[in-house]
Length: 127
Image 1 (spheres, one colour):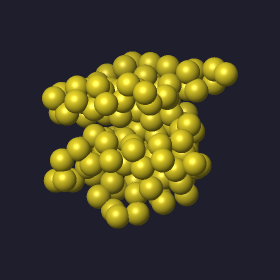
Image 2: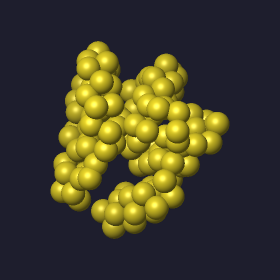
Image 3: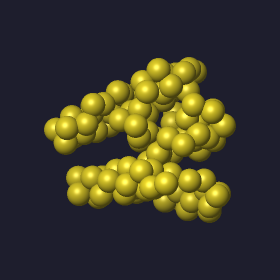
Image 4: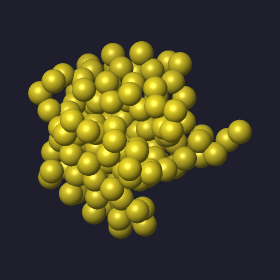
């Protein structure tokens, strides 16, 4: 699993939680220019991506679109998360045709995170 966020505190917390849940975790600072290259290099089975990366608005949406355009990542399950409810609603309406993308609103519980990951991985395993 790879988590992309611009908050070191959030990354550390999510990394600890996911490691405790027995996931191999790679953490990526989403404010870096080579985010897609870092995601590819991590070879994730699922990507947890923050909708808001830095001060550039909904940059997570742009990263999601870049992931879907990359032939190596086009089917990668992506869990998009944010506390920006208006931004999430806007992106959810744009994601209609995208497969293997789920959303999770912050703040979330450990159970909600586990369920969202399980659902994405289960959906990705279906033919």
